[in-house]
Length: 233
Ligand SMILES: [Zn+2]
Image (tube, rainbow, N blue to C red):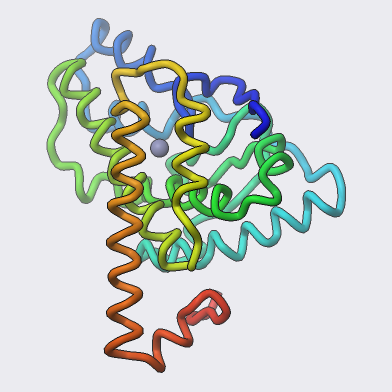
């Protein structure tokens, strides 16, 4: 597997580096809900780029159709999320639901849709527009903020596993990708092998749900399976 230069993502496999600002902010001011939220999703944005050729445009187009399906699986409407190519990132999502997909990442993994879809599902799994609805508690110190970030990452990892199962992909390529790019331990993340377990748990959950759908609602399940796609958008 080629080593991807993630630019600012050395310690964050699927997004910007969350390390510094949590610690710095803590010293200057009391952490509020908005601050934690901007810490999660309000990082400097990577520079947006256009697809360099028709092949990249086609990859982005196919990824966009998965974006719509993943959004519906998350319980959101596809129009709440947009995709753009960017430089120096693997993938990240901001507060407005704009997902930045790294051009080098897309180019290198254009053959590996289980990784691309898994990473995309992880980002959508953060559901930045819903974030405030399920995070009522405001962390009072650095440790609590890190714990909240780990929880948030865990939730997104679990969802990515579920989405892969729902769409008929395997989760092991994503797990290998994660282990491959996580070289440094980071306080905002659980270790990569623990995250791998979370992804597998989510995948099991998704597989079980698909099996149950197939068992109890064969007709519906056929319509929802990898080939077809229910829904408007
Ligand atoms: Zn994440």
